[in-house]
Length: 220
Picture 1 (cartoon, rainbow, N blue to C red):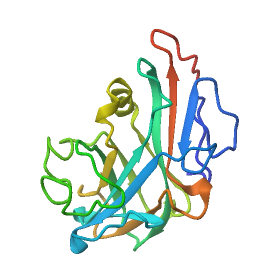
Picture 2 (cartoon, rainbow, N blue to C red):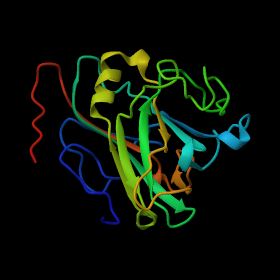
Picture 3 (cartoon, rainbow, N blue to C red):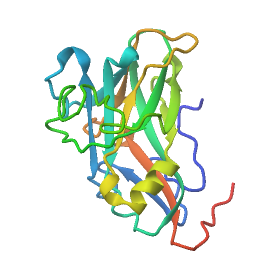
Picture 4 (cartoon, rainbow, N blue to C red):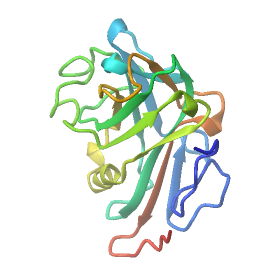
């Protein structure tokens, strides 16, 4: 994997290349954008809020879980989303174990300054399927120690299309890890949050859209 996230025709890459027609990049502090909400929740500190942390962590066995939401008002209702990704910068790894990060659609509203493991969920950890989160992940990404200082990418096109069609359902995603994988085990990975000191490392949502009924014009 390259140390710089690979660009495609539909997203901006931290300002490294010009934005393609119809492409939108959402990253806190870039081009006036200030719509990122993120935090993490901790099973072992169930009433503690981490909404102001500069990083958020995901730990195996659903012990820490991250939450990320982007305000997508710039994507007008009726737009067709042809591609959308969530990109996360890996800050650190607790050991050499690998981790599969699964992104679940959140079904429950939450507040960055108030969310904890216990609240506001129907079940602690946002684990009430159908009330707090979806049953299956919308996307998954493998993280290894080699990814520290690099980006991981989650393909959320279908999820973002749903939010564009029904903006009131956009509660973001829950990032958790429970899958048993080769070279996996107990480990914590930390990712840059929207409060991270280096603006270019903050969570980034890239979207490529066309007006309703139009063509995306995206070529590979």
